[in-house]
Length: 216
Ligand SMILES: [Zn+2]
Image (cartoon, rainbow, N blue to C red; front, side, top):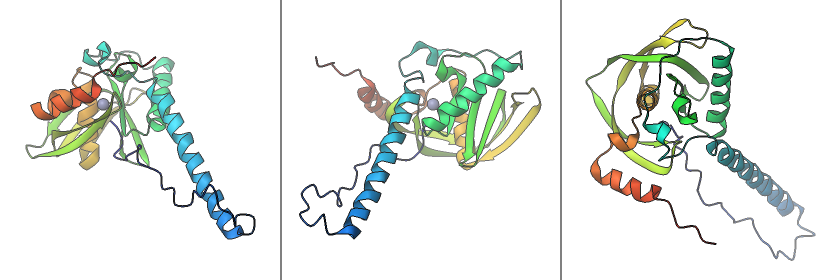
């Protein structure tokens, strides 16, 4: 699942005086310019890292995104390495959740961030309880770039499964955690937010996702 931040926002160029004639004598202004440039550089670098991560994440309409993932049976080093890779990609892509399916790996495993300081990996997750009370909110997806659609989700869920070492885990989730866990669990069954939203928003999203003509 994609972060709420808008990464395509316009930069503020108020300090960007290309032809500042006083610039040799105005040290205060130079420092401001320097700081601003450093911030822009850091943002540009984060954007480049994000693009690199997104390039490694399967994008709609990749067929893997429609497939049902298989139960994990081996809790081995291979699984540990997959979890580490997913953590790195989710972080670099600035996401708050990632399912193995999104790497084209059809194993029942997802990561989610209920808050910025916490990341959980759940293997063979099952949603064992969900509230009747639901809420509609906009969701994005790292596999559907540029798309945000309203999706109705249960307000609270309980997820059971294993950690990557094979120990039983159980999460009683609400808020962002509940929403992300439902979104990522859907990926393991080949279900996307496009399948969960209303017809109007689906049409609009498909318009955004339609391949653009390549200009040569
Ligand atoms: Zn997603």
